[in-house]
Every structure is written in C-alpha cells, then in structure tokens.
Length: 252
Image (tube, rainbow, N blue to C red; front, side, top):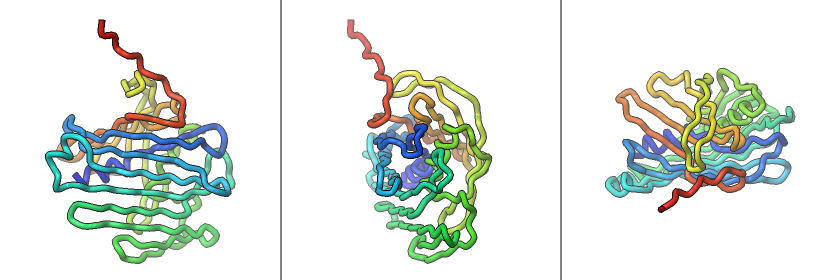
C-alpha cells in the first residue's frame, strides 16, 4: 500500500485559489481507494503564517477495508511546505522549506529542502544524504507547493505546459495538459470540473479534476499504472471553502 498511497499523496493538488493574493485557510479530507476498496485517507490543510506566508500540509494514513486486510502496510506519510509571496502578485508563491516523513512499511523515509532565493539555491537531505542545487529557475517548486501553484495558475488562466520542480534532491519537471471539461458526482453533488492530465510520466496515467465552484480545489485524482491498476482519490469533506450541500434522499 505504501507505493500507491504515496503516489496519490504526491498527485493530490489541494489548496484554495481566491482573487486575493492571500487565500483563506481550509481543511479537506480525501478517501483513497484501489479496486473499489478504501485503503486510506489524505487530510490537507492550508494555514496562514506571519508575513503573508502559507503553511500547506498533507497527512496520509491507512483507513477502510483495504487497510484492515493489509495490516503489514501501516504506512503514514506527512508532507508540508512553507511558502511566501514571490512579489509578482496574483497568487504567485514560492517554497521556502519542504519536509517529508514516512513511517511504517519496510523503513522510515524522510527528506527536507531549504530554498535560498537570493542565491537561487536549494539544499537539503533525502534519505539522510545531503544535496545542493545551484542556479534554480525563479519558478521552481517543491513536491507539494507545485500543487498550490497549479491551482493558482488555473484560477488566473495561466497554466504552463511544464513546471521546474525539486524532486528527491534533483531538478525535475511536471508537465500537464488540459483534458476537457466534465461534470462529475462528488460528496457535494454534481460539480463542473476542468480535467488535467500529466504528460511527462510514461509509466502512469494521472488525471485530476478541478472544480471552479470550489475555487479550483481538486475533487478527484485518478492514477493508472502500467499493469492497469487504478488508484482513485476523491474529496470527502471540506471546511473553509463554501460548497453546496447534497440533497438528502427521502426514505418515503
């Protein structure tokens, strides 16, 4: 379970995109399932910090029937990033610090990045091994802040084809394409969405559904690997962003 839970945690793009540079705080919970069985939950949280900074965190943990029948895979993952405005306005943020911690499974895994923007440099550790990257691009993101950036860019209609990213201590890139509009059923009833698909990962097909009515919050993420195994994450609850309440079905 570790592999698919971590993959969905990275794929998720939770956050909130308001017209102001400083978005509201929020909490969202997603269920993660494989083969129709719930195997985990991901809790996302966005909080304000001093100086207009934002603290964004994801917590993934086993849950549901799939977790019960696979007790040996009791994996818990936390990712968090601290971001600051980069001076461009319109929701442009850049990462300052990123931390990753995985507990359970075969071994503990950890990573941390520290961004020095005046020097355009990032240093840190991945699995205990130090690294340093020089002359990073102005819009470089970490594994979590990239999600917030994509939502902001959707909100302002400026989605890029690719984004520079620090991933496992190396420079990488995330590439996306618009994949059409679709109305899907959610925990809050039917919502119109914009679908994006990853274009830079030949081993997996990843699509994400973003809801403009929820300030471009992702409401569904789907990943299919080379063997056809389908992993799905869907929004379950939300606080801080106004959303429609689904109508209760009548018992009569």
